[in-house]
Image (cartoon, rainbow, N blue to C red):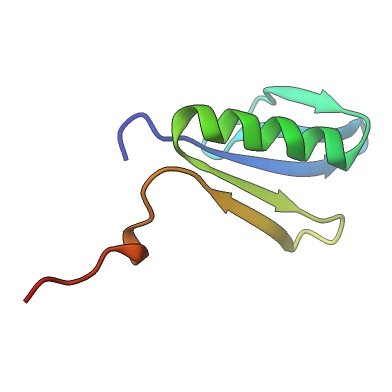
Length: 77
């Protein structure tokens, strides 16, 4: 997946953070989940990657995939 990046949105004591899935530093800190989700989706859309929203319990609440979805391809015979 060259050039495509996944962004995760996570709750912290400082607010909601957006960071690259493989990164440790946040790309941004937001006061609300809605602001963080919007920014995570914007960044994922720009790279053709994925945005993954985690709730306060740590479970995935939503995910959006941008670009080509490999599961949507039809097999050729």
